Length: 447
Ligand code: GAP
Image (cartoon, rainbow, N blue to C red):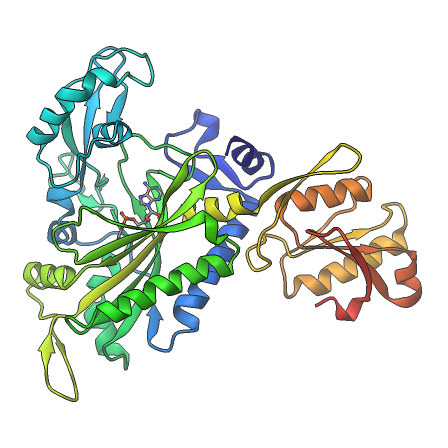
């Protein structure tokens, strides 16, 4: 993972947020190649979940929502992690995660007092990760919602507007709008990619646990109790999607939640075997029953019942959710693609074997020599033509071998070289990233 993180920085995939000011914990910026990869993951996800599904639509809701949203959803009262502070150096730990490392469960349902009692038993085995002392305060439940003063021009900020703790609430708030303005009938789905903010106590593991991140969500609205078959189908579809875009089956696994939140009927994670971190969650697949819409109906006073136009039946639909972190998907695809090959001459070659659809740059176009204007002009012409359709890069810097290596490291599937033969017969060499094999083909056939 250290090597992948270093490549991310060196090749402009991911930077530490606010780096010139010393950086901020849990915040990352995507650089020039990072934003391309990120956007390509989003496109692939949107294609599978909206474009190819007749009964799915997408939305993009405002991040800020009426403060009642987060009361209704249960986040204001229940979205918290137990925190303890080192009395010596003030470093903070997530008590449940530290206990988990010792094989002890401290689940969300436990009260502050109950967690305190368990922590008391084991705290002598937990050293401060910063100063190494064992001087812990009593655990306190710390709410993860991030507050803002949007629309509040007083100094008191008594009615804070929250940043989204999860993106999916935007779909629930628009469920009625969507029914009223489209011809969708149950069962139907709504997809959204949106930002989420969580005051994580200990952001860690690069993009894995951040304070600002994006979620790609689908919410599938079904008739009550008609959830089981659809749930299995959704789980399979999401699994297949990861395989399609290059994750190997041996690096994926399903994990069923043992401790369900009180409203959930069933919940599974798709986990990826991250280098250094091991298997951990990339996506959650949740059967949320009618909890969300029932709560919003109660708090807003708006009737969110669905009326079946054929039978006249009225009911609150159940919701099957898929929710994947974009940063975690990004890290999983990068981890899978990261390859170091030993070469016969003793050197090594680093490459990203990314799926073509995900690769930031699809074609790199090189004139064989920088100082031959006719080659440069022809290469620019090829570049201009291909960039109409694909993200391409023009590079005339350094010897061809170095240029290939640069593209290998960012995962470009094809490098195109314009040489003297190109001027004679209109063919270029195309070099394949994974095999390094080269082939001469006509420029018109590149696409
Ligand atoms: N709406 C459901 C929901 O938010 P979640 O399991 O809390 O469920 C869904 O989050 C996904 O969001 C996770 O599977 C993970 O990929 C991503 N995620 C959650 N917390 C994150 C964090 N602090 N940093 C990065 N990604 C996170």
